[in-house]
Length: 392
Image 1 (spheres, rainbow, N blue to C red):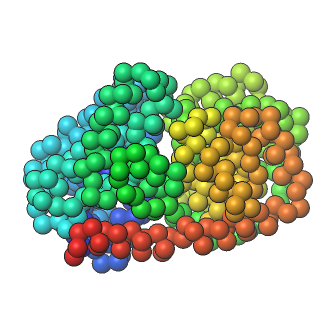
Image 2: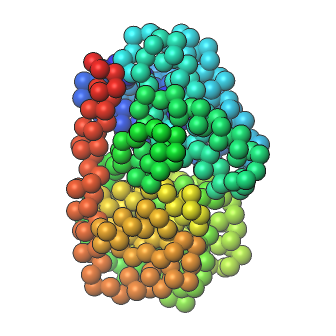
């Protein structure tokens, strides 16, 4: 197949779409990605890139980059970033080769990032498939947008219009199916997988006298990392328990300030690390944390970090609701409490620090990963769906 991928985010930004595209190339497909210049999550164009139209080849993938308004900080800048991608790519869409077999939209936030793909598909009479990783406009709620407000209602109409133009919609969380059922849109489940480098991590790390608790990922409002900081405050007298936070995002400064205001010496905030460094960080962890904001809509999300934690054989402790909580329980891969309950989270961490069955929990997670989220299975399913859609 000749596949045109539309994704506002791509390497060197830390998203799995890069691995998906490179894996499809290894399977013999020709892949071209239309993306923006990298600026996620810190909001500034990455060093080594200029905010201009450009073309490069990365590990066999043709990458067309568009100008984009960087995220910077604040909701106004974020909104400008969201609308800039479909606007800035208009000229590029007209120039792209017409002989692609299928359009594949990797839909994170915003849903408007699918517009270039819709325009290309319509102009050239091609089939289009969307991979929904963030439900819209539900994802806006995590940023403080009221569900009964005018902004939410406007984006609900936009999202519905975009989703209804798809020939096929894939969902990363089974809970998303209810949303699309309201639109009479059939979906197929395509979970996220972990990068292969995380699958080779040993089940037990070298002991150093400390119990290392790790959170890795985006630090935004949705992730509720403050729940971790408050749990650490509850455990500040347990000198052997160390909290490590890796990542960056829109809420990074607030999290750092909260840690400083509480005077916590048991919390280390390391910032964002390159993906190549993360397997070693996982290896030196005892448990991994996943937290989400307490919200019915957000609870439908299954963060990709869960699959990575499982692949790495690391027990998971979660302060979460919904699908993520149920999967951790079903896999018997760790311990869970309700979202934002930092006191219960601290109790679970303390219990885990003394639990002799911790390694078993990690191995349970890996077994569940191999059965449900293994990369080969997910990619084979994606390939089959794309072939079915474009009828090659």
